[in-house]
Image 1 (cartoon, rainbow, N blue to C red):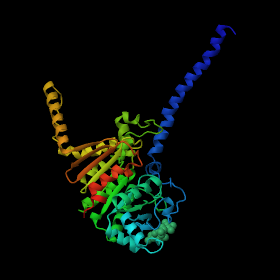
Image 2: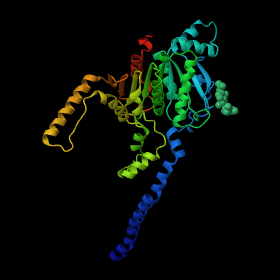
Image 3: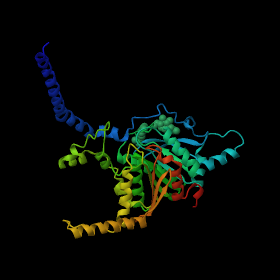
Image 4: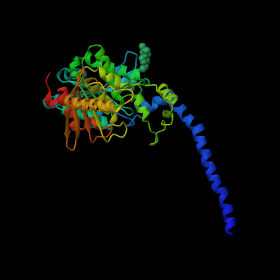
Length: 403
Ligand SMILES: *[C@@H]1O[C@H](CO)[C@@H](O)[C@H](O)[C@H]1NC(C)=O
Ligand SMILES: *[C@@H]1O[C@H](CO)[C@@H](O)[C@H](O)[C@H]1NC(C)=O
């Protein structure tokens, strides 16, 4: 083949490649992207993406054998709790370790299976954690069992771990209001069995922090004060999660956010709020927020947003002029310096080598502790021993217990 002929043979293929790429892009932008947006706007797709309740790992759980998942024999009672709107919620009640050890050492033969009267005794003898889990999975998921064990042994608390409606073996379908109702029902279950409000600590993980925040806000509005609230790997609100949403690392919603109507559309598309940023301002009980810097599911910036919002009303206001002259810019800089000096006075910060950072301050209505760890990722930040010990201190549990 001559040179000329070769070039002739090449050109059409090159052009076809170029054309098909342009055509592909147009197809994607014009057709597939709207389909994608329509899909994620659909309430049922969002419900599955938010709650992931159909992922019932580990599969085929033997709920009546918590021992299979690492809990000591006769330490856990498998129960059902019925909600006012007739959902049956599966739950485990795990005994505080000191209580369990006493039972074990004083029973003559093999420990018999746990019974309800023993649970009642444990509820009055030890504080209890109401554990509100994150998206997906069952109450038997290994990283959750790791939490129950850490709390029972290190905090000396009982743990009530329930499965929300639609999760695990619980009946019904999940929704924001439904999950909050489930949490309130479990709270009432404890109080009906002799727990005082000041004996119960609310602990939420990931999606469960949204539920916990709504429950804590509701209790505060009723003038009821739990012993404490812990938000482990929380998010500021669903809207803020959506802003940074990525699928396979692609910021797929970014194009919409470039237009005011796109932002409006996104806001209207989101069917769950879980607005923890608003709720946390109303908390009336000591609150611990913990987040790992190596959390790849929910960035720790969400926790920093929550903490900053709590500190904000304690700082001198920032009053920038509309157009900044040199003097105004200087004044603004002074204000900012004054604010960060004031933050330094209000917030006691401790850097702990190899562990992370602890910030403590008194908010308008409650004391707050923020623990930012180096490790723990998303699922395990709540059972880092350093985090659990901060819970012990703030909530007066374990070796810090005082009633
Ligand atoms: C709880 O309810 C489920 C049905 O929702 C049932 O299969 C299970 O046996 C019940 N468990 C207990 C301990 O009653
Ligand atoms: C509650 O739900 C169960 C099934 O989970 C059903 O058998 C029962 O009739 C319901 N009761 C009421 C009052 O709706």
